[in-house]
Length: 458
Image (tube, rainbow, N blue to C red):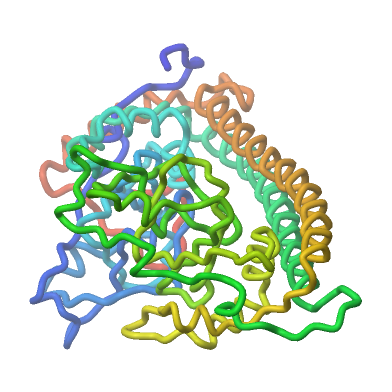
């Protein structure tokens, strides 16, 4: 980004802000006597803060003055396993008095040369995100930043007056995008509610047959340890390896096969463990009661595939249509029964083959099952079309947001005013003030919840 409008400057972040680290959490920091609110990586999203759960930390003499956050500070996430999340940041508005932050958050404190809100918007723009990806190092899949690397990130800085115009214009457009995304999210929730209603209607016996609920053991083969493989060192894939499904591959009513592991089999084990078309894979355990027992049908997408022992395999008998079993199993009413029988140990909800066998489902005639599955699939097709349109809406909104930010920080969103003081003049004045103040140059700012953006001190 070199073709900037007159009056703009392209400078490293260290020219317009102070960059500082935070507090490392240690045993001696356990909050006892002199405890203060303590922000962590989990509290910082891209462009917003999550303050519903804020931890505390022990501070010692003089540390509050050194580490306390100021209104207008930008909090940047130092490391993440996802390249897309590295360097995400949000502005601190003084929401909590005397708040500090951990060392995995880097604080960027703007000088008079840049408005805090402009800094936040620019930092989360494609220009800066691209730079962060380039400078972030990776060790064992973890992308990390440092204060030294952040100081080298370049920002496009317009005159202060134009910064105000850019912020005002961007906030208006971005607010409209947020409203549009909320409407799209609501539409997505409605499709989920409708699908749940369709499945519940299936579980409510919407057929004119007199039938009672039947325990699964009477109409299907249920196997766990006997039908699934425990991952052990000897199972490391070397010579005789096969695709291996895990809990992560099974969602409610669908399979995610983008990341399928492999496992070593011995002798004739493939004959014993191989999945068959129509098998239902049920998740045995989960920390969330809402996810316990979620299941999806195997359509033989991958030849000679096996599964781990944390998935319970249900193989329908001749009186049970596999598609009907999948739909009836994932119906909210059935899921509620599954949750009621799941046990909980240390927060982990678990099923057993015996409990799965005891779950009762309505079983009409096979012809009725097939008819009901066809009707349910018609609903699923309609909802898939709606969900595709919803996904397209999200993508368009994200593309528009990125385009807005690119235009804004390239100087193409608002008109320039020749009367504005050039950024270079203000930057030179700040450099001179810093040089005159020497090493101790950071004036303290008020700790109130707000501070005039244009009056941020050096």
